[in-house]
Length: 371
Length: 260
Image (cartoon, rainbow over all chains, first blue to last red; front, side, top):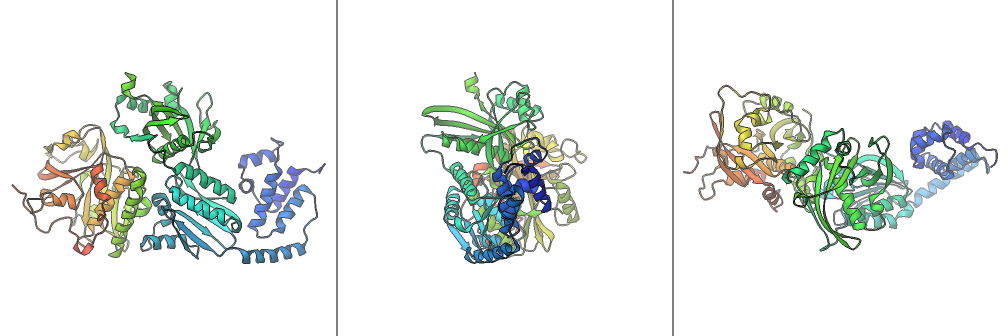
């Protein structure tokens, strides 16, 4: 395609359909800044996969598959422009596809992984039925996810699956049953809207993703919800109110700054600390700048649960950090465990800052060791 | 009055995983019991709003300074007022506050800071004398203060599921070491001398009741319960199975003398 200006074509195709940068970014899973940088010419890298993803999302939104080819034709200037006849044919295909899709359904996987299924899409009504409770004004779906560890799903007539769960409380059995169901029925699911967690709770911020992404996300939560190895590990949460003074001094220093991190950095206590953020309910390591002026210059590393080795330890760290941020209070754990074959005993302190979503995690020496 | 449904406010983050689901199911059962008699449990976090409610109904209930918005602001993090609503009107209430004790509970009470905050002033000549031993021991800890019970809904037993919902909320949403409350002796005692504190225990869920907290011309028992004890009570099988018609009232119909 020499001589084709992809960026201008893409901009024109989006404008023609009144699609904003933000919507386009959501469609291809990029940040709006990335799209804006492309259009401003600040980066020359334009991924063809992103354009294909936007075209597919546009077609899906309008329930008109020909729109995908039309969009791609406008951007890449290859192939032939789909005609009005193609559109009619597409509509007929969509009608046929709908006939082959599964019937609308909703499912609850309870804490034991047992599914309750109903041929309708009202998840709340089914939750009231399971809990044997008269319907009220509350958000019963959020309650069931957040407190009971349930995983809920609704599948509508066009193959959109809405997945509801709270990552920190969903049980391993419920998550596993949901993942298995999704894997089995993936051919009937065209897209997944996962209710992303806000501050560790089930929130109403659906974001479209592929079935395989949703299955991978459930897999990570299954890992995080897996019990620690019996006998090998001793993990004990300690009440900070009952701990002796050196720790309280550390906490005082942590809260002296504008955030725990700057407080600890100012007190020169940050050398051995690690900085994490909780994104979509999952702990992600951050590399901080030398001036500690997070969050404006933070660099997102990888998910803690994606560590290739010591997966039990990764699950423990993920749990500790998300718990600390959710409660917005410093948490202290006494650990006795085996990492990479070596026995380790230490105390682990997490200091959250809900404003920036950052958790500072540091080993802490108990007073008997310090003296 | 700004309130949210109880189940929306309930977040069992402070409980271990194995107790979280049990507590949540019990909360659902207690909410169901209240709905059976037409009461809708809702949670507010403002003590100023609770004070207005208490003053509007001053003929039927009294306002404790610990729950008075004039002395304590209250907020989502440390205050929950549970209202039983009938037709949108609050007809019963009960509440809890999460309080940090920088000094001992006895010192805080005797200095009046506990009752009237840092800036409030007690009534003229009002003195608080604490002889309950536990009040001297509770120091540098978070406590859950439970109280503000009132019920003029018509069902004499409706307050019991409400108190239990407050206890569950305090266990589930907050971290503390001891649950504390006060009650007049006739409320804490029953006639049965072999089991003198069963009312404090059976109704309010406290493990012990001690004499005395004297404030002005009124005398109260100090009721306390360690977190583990209240947790064990709340997770016991019958905790949420309440027959409202036969449930005891929060306040006995006749004042009962304290055993010698």
